[in-house]
Amino acid sequence: MTLKKNVPTKIIVHHTADTLGGPQFEKVNAYHRTLNFPVSSLGYFTGYHYLIERDGTVKRARLDSDEGAHTIGQNTESIGIGLAGHFDYQQPTAEQKRSLGQLCYELSQKYTIPLERIAGHRTYRSTTCPGANLSDDTARYAILSHQLSLIEKILLWILKKLGL
Image (spheres, rainbow, N blue to C red):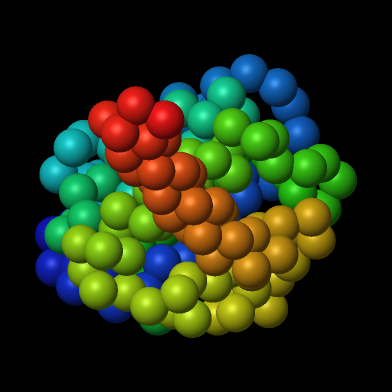
């Protein structure tokens, strides 16, 4: 199967719906292979472009320009980000939120994606994904938190340079 070109205009957030601990990237890749998802140009079957493990590690499964396999009808105009966990029953970790904010910030800057075009899978399909404990605003708040962190670092650097 030949991949179509992806032109990102939105970011869609998912959860893996797996409550078991430990890294999930390889597990998701193996599962998505059984679903016959198209292989990415990076050699993975994982439908998301990125997967954020519970420790905050970001794993890349697809180039941003690769067609996704995460949301029917949206895979050639979106970046799919999956978070390890089942957020109907668990909470995302602080590390996941931090990585989600940084990744969404970088992607939104790179592709000029406004905050209101960052949403959960449930926005486009009848599902609870990314879970009851991960609101559609979580990614937006994580971006704002990331931006505040950058501002704090700049202010501290300025104060240090001024000797204050």
